Image (cartoon, rainbow, N blue to C red; front, side):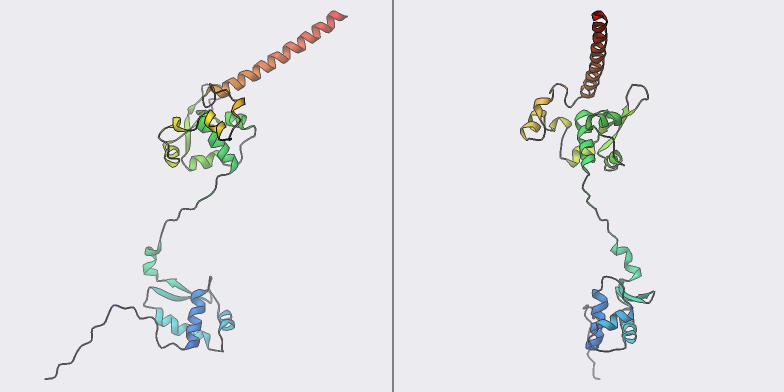
Length: 233
């Protein structure tokens, strides 16, 4: 009895075989395309005239049992991942976006003057908030509401979060650069800043007190000038 040798199949994936050079052209054109192609577009790219539709149907049959399928949607052809493998292709992608200048300034004010209200931030910046500036910082979880200020209207105060410290590799807020360090780096003009109140809740309060003093001094000057003019009569 003669025993026949049985050849074992290896695990090498065999891609479509017995394709003519023009059929390979069609395959390559569809594969390399950034978007699905219609038959007319494919015909314009092959080097010689060929029955493109027949070729596409042949390739579709060849790829039907593979991880990549050739599909036709709305008369346009493209290679797609096999539907039963689509779950393997899902991945999370982090999209990096630069913060706007307004967001950076707002974050800096909150960092150094927290807890601080929206109105106080606008007062220190000197301009009103842009659209979603504060919301963007909260979405990043760098800033959060920190209670309400005990003044009429009870406005929300904002503070930084632990995620802010983690992102900027800080152990605590006191690790942030001081006024002198910021001045030495040329980032601020430290000669015009009172170290005793910079970075504390006193900053805004004293600014408000200065405003009140200016108002009162203006009133005094106005009254004095009026009295002087009356005495001269």
